[in-house]
Length: 115
Length: 114
Image (tube, rainbow over all chains, first blue to last red; front, side, top):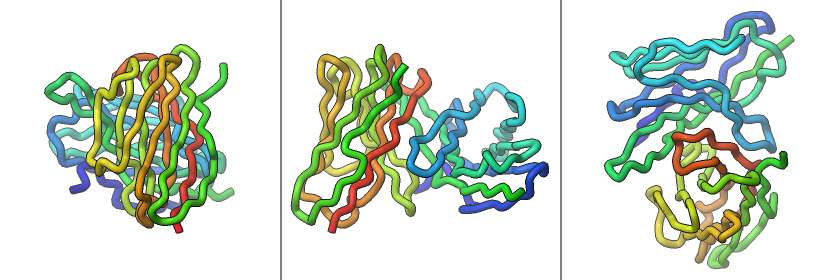
C-alpha cells in the first residue's frame, strides 16, 4: 500500500516557467513533509520541508504547499531552470509509538526543464 | 567536510550469493539509515542504526541485515540474493537519531543480481 503517491512519473517544463510537482498521502499520522532532489549517480539531497501545522513554506524559488484536508502537497519551482532537471521525491514522516520515526517516500517525479 | 561515502559504488552478484555494502557517515554523525531504491517502488526504508543499535526496521525479509560500528560506520548485508534485490542501496547519515534530524545521503551502491 503506497502511503505517499507521486502520480506523475515525469514532467516537462520550459525554462522560466513554473514547475508544479504533486504528492498525495493517505496516512493521517504524517506530521512532517519533505522534498528531495536527486541527480543521476548522486544521492538525494534535501530541498525543502513543511510541518503539518503550516500550509506554506517558501525558500527562494521553491515553495511547498500543504492541503491537509485533501492530504495533498505540491512543490512549486519558479522560475524553472535547466539545472532543476532531476528526480524529485516527496517524503513524509510519521511518529511511531516508540518515539522513533521513519520517512516514507514516493516513487519520484522526473522533472525536465528545457532551455 | 567530507560527505557520506558508500563502497563499492557498483556490484554484480549472482543469485544465491551474499553481499556486504559499506557506508561511512559524515564525521560526527551517529545515525545511519539504509534505503533501497527501485524503479517500481521508489525509496524504501530498510533500517536505522544509532549508537551501534538498530533503532528502526522496515518491512524487509530477514535476509537483509546490518550493523554499526563504534566509529558509526555501518554495513548492510544481504544473504541468498534474489533477482529482485537488484537496486540502488542508499545510506543516509544524520547527527541524531531518526528523521527529526536532516539526513544526508550518499551516492549509493548499485547492486545487480544476475
